Image 1 (cartoon, rainbow, N blue to C red):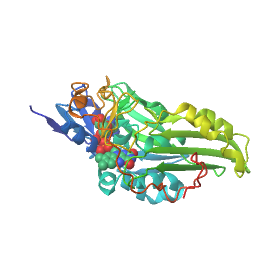
Image 2 (tube, protein in one colour):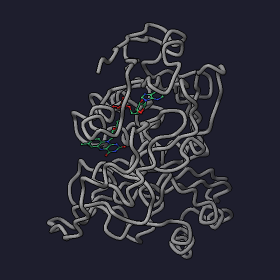
Image 3 (cartoon, rainbow, N blue to C red):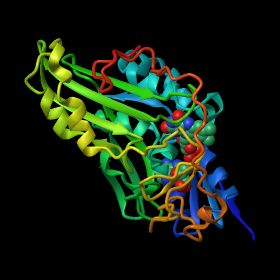
Image 4 (cartoon, protein in one colour):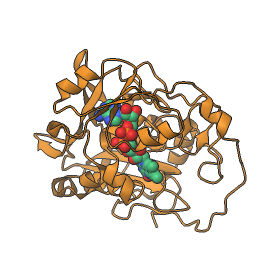
Length: 333
Ligand SMILES: Cc1cc2nc3c(=O)[nH]c(=O)nc-3n(C[C@H](O)[C@H](O)[C@H](O)COP(=O)(O)OP(=O)(O)OC[C@H]3O[C@@H](n4cnc5c(N)ncnc54)[C@H](O)[C@@H]3O)c2cc1C
């Protein structure tokens, strides 16, 4: 089979050549390469976005920080403006996977992939970030929290590209944090993660947003838990009381997540480790990670529930995130 590889120089050109389901945009190409090898992604036209200057870089625009969709995780993590403005967000990008993943993986590719264990969707949703997209129907603005409809499935239409991520700057009365818990290695996906944004009036919490990752098919909006924080003092020792229960009400963690060889669990969909029920919800009408034959991965991977030895059970947290909210009850050590 012949595959065309196109390298447009503008977003308009990219949208024009991404016209149908057989075309696939490429950010860093990490997921596309891996999923192609598994025969889960199929395209006759690959459209590399990496040479479009307007899609790359981190900029401050008025009250927002704007991340270009093809900016690699590592570049975002090291950006001096972001590190000064929103160090928690920079730190989160700096703890994605390993150095190779951070060198190639892009924020746009990460979000469009909609893998439920990824980090950026969780903190970006908590921060109230929005996406700018461009497609055949024009430009639209979309909250990050509304992008994913399920594992590896998004609301993006065929030919619609994420062009930028717009992150509101924190006011002087706001705080945010991101915690990533992973028991085995520091360079893996999260077993569970939490992103939090708070607005304070003095010591009193007056607004709160909490999203959890890796514990549901999409980043989980823990609105009821966040509501429990409103009106409470941030230094109130009892502020965590009830929070864990409220979070537990809305999350659906996989019992074996990262603890066994397969990721078989309760969600429809898949992650790199294997399928859950063979549906690998990837192919949406918009062609995001569109697989040719749904369920083929399950034919190849047999569920192996053998527990892996957990050598280092100590949680590893992002060191420079202030663990203001910790549903495990520990204090971020
Ligand atoms: C070993 C390993 C460890 C990892 N660890 C982590 C981790 O700890 N945390 C984490 O969050 N992630 C992790 N990842 C995932 C990684 O961050 C993502 O795979 C990567 O970000 C995908 O980005 P990409 O640019 O390579 O996407 P690509 O492979 O280029 O694209 C992914 C999908 O998005 C589409 N796409 C790409 N760009 C756009 C765009 N601008 N608009 C619309 N659609 C687009 C593609 O068509 C494809 O469907 C890990 C991956 C690996 C391999």
